[in-house]
Image (cartoon, rainbow, N blue to C red; front, side):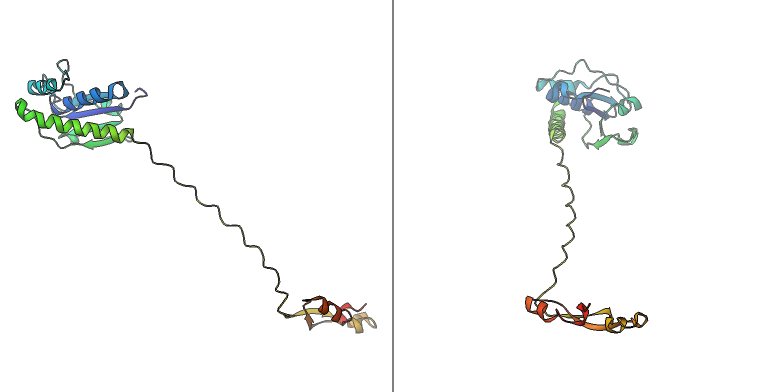
Length: 206
């Protein structure tokens, strides 16, 4: 395989629809795309009405020959487009498979082939346009988790009181073995005046 994208067109005889599709893609894409065509039951030659219809739009396919569909041709292609024979096309992972429903021009005159030719042109143009579209932008990264909210500062205006354990140091000063914990109500300092009011309390006794 080359670095160019490659497309394989497949129909039953490789004498009409797939030949026109391959010719249109070569004409419109030039060397940007590698083009192949094949048939599940190839005919001996390309349909003369198809050759004439393509010649009307300035595309010469007189040098084309029907070819047998092989697994190698499918495996070497990025896109496989079938036209009435999708069930015989080998399936390989990583390939894009499309099926175009088109009338078979076998046994038809140029007048019947023209609308098929024009339909195929539009489909090929759409295929090229979709291939040339820019890829979808990458998904936006997930937002970073919000930092933990800072711990709120104590509300110094509430004058709350909390029960905290402390030691009865007055008795412990006489007999340390009697220093036992108990619970008292201590005042949460909320202002400078509170600081002065508690400066002589038992919890600050030496």
